[in-house]
Amino acid sequence: MDKINLAEKFSLFTKHWSPKIIAELNGQHVKLVKFQGPFVWHAHEHEDELFLVVRGAFKMEYRDRTVELQAGDLIVVPRGVEHRPVAEHEVEVMLFEPAATVNTGNAGGDKTVAQADWI
Image (tube, rainbow, N blue to C red; front, side, top):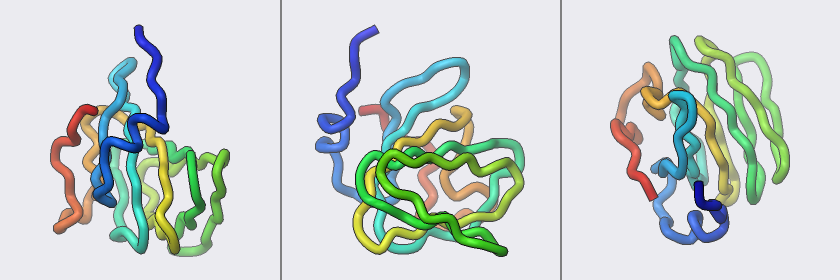
């Protein structure tokens, strides 16, 4: 039941597209991730995902539209919806998702993190 300082936790890693777990509640992981550039198109068959922009900005691309997000904005991607986050510059994002969620969903590939590290 200690506090978690987001700036401190973000300072502990530099690798993009490699989410880190900072908390767990009710079967959900709270993760931090830094990213830049495009991710892979993917969907999560059984999980919704929440993205909260802590620092920077990014675009959440869907096949039929794009949503621009800035620091302080959040978006929920419903299960089954194909999406791709894209950031022109480095962005820091907090994720809320079920503990079993794999970052690349149904896409797999070299950006897959099968088990995120705790920091």
